[in-house]
Length: 264
Image (cartoon, rainbow, N blue to C red; front, top):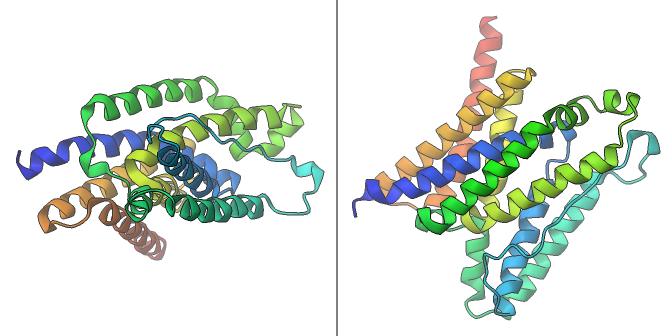
C-alpha cells in the first residue's frame, strides 16, 4: 500500500470529526465552557483505560458524561469553568493511577492523548463514527433553534420561559456521546483542537451563524489536510502534527484578521 492510500482512511476520519466537532465548538465558545471538551475527553480516556484494566473492549462506549449549567439568575458563587477544570484534573490523575496497573500503561496513556488516527479503518471504525455522527447531526438540526438560542442568546431563552436546564442536559448528553466516540480515534489533544480551534478562528471574523459554520468547517478541514500531508511527506507522527497545524492555522487567522483590520 502506498503512502497516499494509507492516508485515505485518516483523511475521511478527520473530515467526519471536523464536520461534527467544529460545529459543536461554536456552541462551546458561545457558552464560555471552553474546557468542557477537555474534561469530557479525559473522562472518556479514563473510561478506556479502566476498560483495559477490567478486560472490557477499550473502544466500548459504556459510559457517558453530561453537564448542565445553572441559570444566570441564580448567581453562581463558583464559576462553572472551575468545576470543569477540577473534573479534568481529577480524571487525569485517575487515568495515571489506572495506567499504572495496566500492562503497557505508558503506551496506553500516549494513545489516549494522541489517538490512533493513522491506523483507522473504514470498517468498522469510520463507518460507525459516520453513522453515529449523522444521527447526532439530525438531532442537532431538528433542535437547532433551541440549542442556538440558548447558546448565543440565553437571555432570550430565559425571557421565553424555556426550561434551560433540561435543554442543556440534552445538549451535553449528545456532546458527551460525540466526545466519547471521538477520543478512541483521535485522542484527547486532537479532539480538543478539532472542537475549539476552528470555532475560535471563525469567531475572529464574524458573528453570523451561517458564516461561523462555514469558516469553522473550512479552517478545520484545512488544518487536517495540512497535518496529514506534512506527516506523509516528512514521515512524522500524524496526531501531534495535526494538532500543531491547528495551532498554525489559528496564528495565520490572527495575522489575517490584523491585516484585514489594518486595510479597512
